[in-house]
Image 1 (cartoon, rainbow over the protein chains, first blue to last red):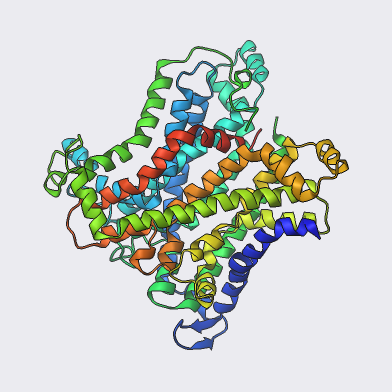
Image 2 (cartoon, rainbow over the protein chains, first blue to last red):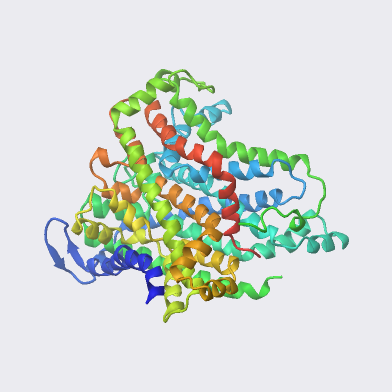
Length: 289
Length: 285
């Protein structure tokens, strides 16, 4: 009996606040469910409405666009920085590593407030600098692309240092002898990076792509705060993400059924992504050096 | 977190560090730190300065005036206390609960162990946030809306933490030690507290830290669950400052700075261990 007592706290909490809500999401999604009114069984109507809802596709498009704009620069930057940090004679190595973790400990709310000030159309630091170069001003909050770029900048800022540390840890696990042998064979810095560092990083790269995708599906606080709390993230929903759309429908419009249907859609996306991850990681493993 | 992070023997062979390596790394460090500096600059200037072009680059003298305004606009002291309670209990609770479960999965034998471990691993992939509607319904049935336990109790379950502690306990503690302790008559409970936990305390500490930081910074769930200003965590208090009709631009920035400051102080002391912990939990080749 004893061993189960050690794992019971996790499983009890997980059952009540994780698994049960997840299963219940599928149930509520079948209803027209008003939290203070009627619950009417409507079968799959919520899903039919969802697939025909331009706001849903808009939110999906925004989420994808923000994800692409944040993940690609983040991972490329982290690759470069991890490569630079992975140097025997680098000075102040700990200082560099620690400073790269500062964005991670800064809350998303504080980040959103400071970045929307820096990117402000009228008084922002960035538009002032762009103005000196004769560009702009760019309205980063009210325009579609501008708001996507602004949110992507915040996400990238928050995560690139963390990702760099994950890559660096993987690089440090590569035995030094392999690099030395390559150097003896005349491979320069770049070829060492492409032929030794990059292949050994593949599993962790797949891992970070998947985690950044799952994070991307959950983006909510950034668009809420840059649009100063509007339920739709601007007049044309220019930065409304999927999770934000879920929040608006469930807690702004009190459509618990419809909100749950959006939750189910998110669940399907996560399962598909996890499947792709599994496929890629089992395919990649044999190729590791 | 003991072995691999600082061994120079494993690093890339020792060619000289070029100047542009430092230039790029300094640029990256500057990028990470500048927004926090800027937060402080705006938090110390009044609205007239904050809206002047070219912008002020140096801090002004209004820090205490704006901080006072923060404290009088929202119950900010209370929200800091709330955040300390929530993040503190979650951090400490996760460290202990994950060590317990990680120990069971690593060293104890019981029926269904592998299946249950698979469940733990699978739950790491699915963000529970997508089930936020039923979560809210469950919390209302429990009459927990607008309370701190609505944040604390769900936050205690951390599948990643169990997996991480299991890895540490598997590699740090040999079965022989445990068998020797058993022969000496120690119970499993005593073995956990006297042998296992002291040995993996550094790993549990880092796990607790990460749990603390995540809970301190959490937004969506507290935003949905908390209603009255006395219950706000600092993140929700910042949001309230942004909403307030006070037109002082520095106000939300001042609140953000004050909400970040405790974590910066904490980070100054334990940042080194966080870096080592994150790198140690990472994939290794």
